Image (cartoon, rainbow, N blue to C red; front, side, top):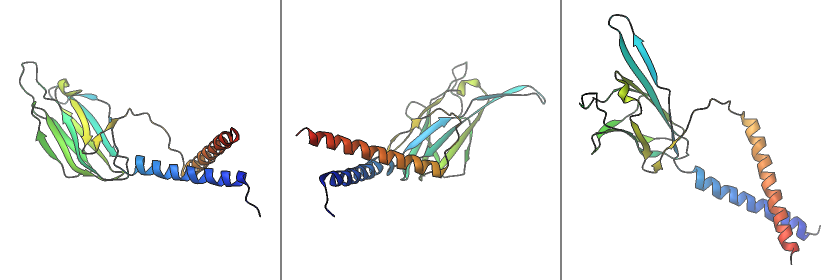
Length: 190
């Protein structure tokens, strides 16, 4: 069987696409990647005895990368009441229970610090407070590897694994075909 330049070109395009996919995978996925999204803010009016307003919200932090993120930090601005007095840090609940610390920032704010966040781990920080002034007091989410991407929540259905595999195969075949025709076109110009 004789190897034609056309068949060699097809094989070469497949190999090049595989190498590019491998390098892109190493560059984009083999590192920590932190995303954060804010749960909705809620106001509850407790009427059992003396009516009192209670506010809640949550921040969900997730490492969607393939490596462990270090020193994940959530910043909070200093909050004052109507008379200008600095308010105490709100009550927080962290799920699942993990090691964390709370540090003071130079401007008077606070930072919740998680020493590590392993790949595909998610932490939910829930806040409970009695004054509406705590709304929008979160300032930043970052780690040693970079700032987190703040995303908006849109409930969507996740694709089954078999559909993801089919889409990946179609993408690979399409990229190989485009590369093949590009090289074929460039060679025909000579």
